[in-house]
Length: 101
Image (cartoon, rainbow, N blue to C red; front, side, top):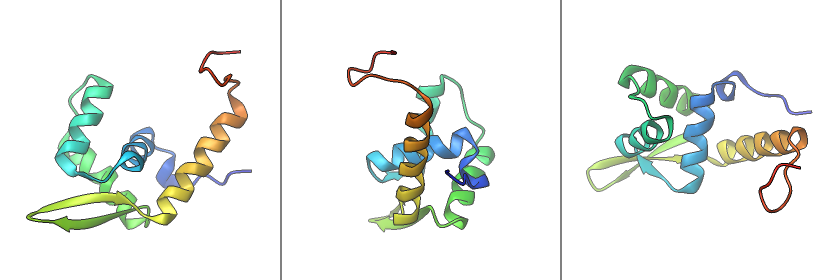
């Protein structure tokens, strides 16, 4: 059984991890992608709080690329995200074509 840490109990934190699994991103680009997906403006303090919590938990790291900080999943973050996806798939019946069964 998956032991879900409090850091991934937040939907926003999980969604940040999902986007970072796709590719490392600058904070503003990450925030914009979430805002587009949610169709709502995210308070910067709330967004950066979620990002900092993931970083403090060791799930996200910061890399410097040029003059910008770029956020990426750590190995621990990737493992936790994969564990969560497996847990979801164990509880949701989806066929290979993406259709509900």
